[in-house]
Length: 347
Image (tube, one colour):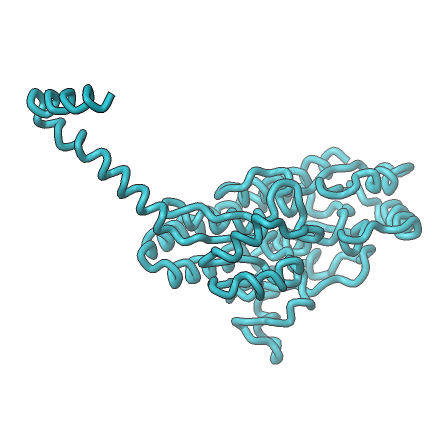
């Protein structure tokens, strides 16, 4: 085959000189493309929503690796050998922080010593909301009084920055706030800014690509925010119960009314007394929907709504059922909003 190929290329070059250079240049172009891929930094991300934001910013440069893939949850995840190898070889690692991915804290110290590690719960401009005590919490007054979702975010941010004990750029007391930060698109924008800064510092050769992608992502997140407001607007006043208290940022951004959660911590299956308490709560509040999550036992939801007029639905705050990629974040957020609207509208 090699002997036949040589004469064929010579004939092509003699009879069609205008095509000879592109044909002969193909191997060089393929080699250059391979070099660009090899030059892309190895970037590792912890969970799907973070992977999605990083993927969007890295488009055209490379694709980040993901640790918590499939239907796994960061609340119950065990590190695999392949994950450990990725951490050891990574140039950049993105995670939310020890408050969410506790399983990563020690491996990062042991394996990520040569990487630039960015805990996105330290991103400047984030709004952080404190943990709520207990699962059968009452809705916060400010979440119900303010109709303007942007106003809610601005007020929470101002209160956060006004705290005299708070460092506006870094809050290292990771155990005091709800870590489901990505469920507010404005927080996603803040994390995207930190992702971009980190990638540019680690890989300045591709800085323009990262910055251009980040600008496009910002615009998409603004448009998503407007879209989500419209989706949930008709059902904002209807109370509902969630599996665990993961939706506080979505709640504050869009003025929806979460009345309580089945379990305080998704790592702990609630006992009979806890389930009975939530069952009573559904009846007392007239909660119209109780939402399960894909990773956890749906039977508990059926027990909670038994004998009531409440309906059941599914919310997926960690994207367990979604395919990883740059569009996942948008699919995730639309899915939450539409699930709420569909269940609450029919109740």
